[in-house]
Amino acid sequence: MGTSPKTLLGTKTVLGDGLTVSAIGFGGMALTPVYGAVDDAESLATLHHCIDVGMTFIDTANVYGGGANETLIAQLLADRRDEVQLATKFGINGDPTTGKLKARGDAEYVRQCIDESLGRLNTDTVDLYYMHRRDTSVPIEETVGAMAELVAAGKVRHLGLSEVTADELRAAVAVHPIAAVQSEWSIWSRDVERNVVPAAAELGVGFVPYSPLGRGFLTGTIRSAADLSSPGDFRSHIPRFTGEALDANLAVVQVVTSIADEAGATPAQVALAWLRQRAETLSVASVPIPGTRRPARVDENAGSIAVQLRPEQMAALETAGATVSGHRSIDPNWVSSARE
Image (cartoon, rainbow, N blue to C red):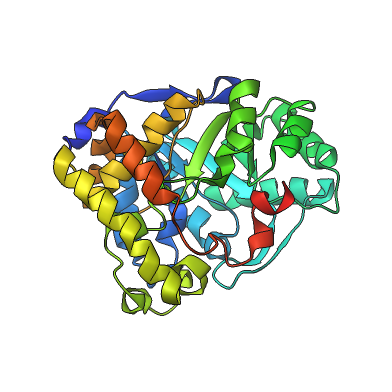
C-alpha cells in the first residue's frame, strides 16, 4: 500500500528561518507511557529505523516521561547526531497524561530548562527549541527574548512555539525569527486553519502538526472505548474519545477508510496526504510528526509521500472532519483556540 519507505529518503522541507528537515518527522511522545506501556529497546529500534528511512526530524520535550524521552533519544544521538534534526521543548510543569498542567515561561526557567535538556540529550545544541505552552502571566516577548539568548549562546539553532495564537506568533516574530509553530492539526482538528496557519504562511513560519493521525483515531484502529483500556492511555480522558462523541466520530473514520480503499493506501497515509495537500493549498511549509512504537508504522507513514488525493477526495475528507464531536484537549483552555 502507498509506497516503499525509501520514498522519503532525501525528501526535505524548509520550515521558517531556513530550517531544513525531513518531509515527515517523528513525534517522540509516543515512546512514553501516554498510550500504555512501552519497551525502551523496541523504542530505540524504532528511532533508528526512522533515520534509516530518512525520517530524520525527531521531536521530543522535557516533560515527556519526566525527561525519560530525552534520555532515550540521547542513545540515538550517541551514534547518529549528525543525521538528526533535533527538536525539544520547555514550558510545561505537570503530567500530560492527567491534563493537570501549568505553563511557565519566565526567562530564568527558559535558561534552566535548556541546560537540563542538553544534559539529558547529551548534546551541545538543539536544532529547534519550542516554547511548549504559553505562560499568559509572562509577556511572550520575555520568553522569546530569553530563547533568543540561547541562539546567541550556541545552545539552540532555531526557535519554535507550540499552541500559540496568531497574535502571539506576531509578537514573537517581532523579537526573533520563528522557524515553526507546532499545534494539533489533522482532518478532525482544524481550528488552527482559522487564524494561526494563515499568520504562519504570511510571516514565513513553518507549521509542524502534532497528532496528524488524530492520536491514532484516523487510522481506524480505535473502534470503541475498549480500545483505550490500556493503563495510562490518556486518550480516554479527551472529550472526543468518550461516550457518544466517540461513536459519532467513527463516521469520520469511515470516510477516511473508504478513500484509502479508492487510493490504494492505508487510512494513515490518506490522513497524512490530506494534511500535506491542505498545507500546500494554504501556502504554509508543513512537516507532520506522527508518532508510533513500531518500525512498520514508520514505513507506512513515510509511504504517504507518494499518495496524491483528488480534489473530490479532499473535499469529502474536509466535510467529514467538520462533523467531529467533542473537544480535542482534556482542558480546552490548554490550546490556542481558547485565546483567539
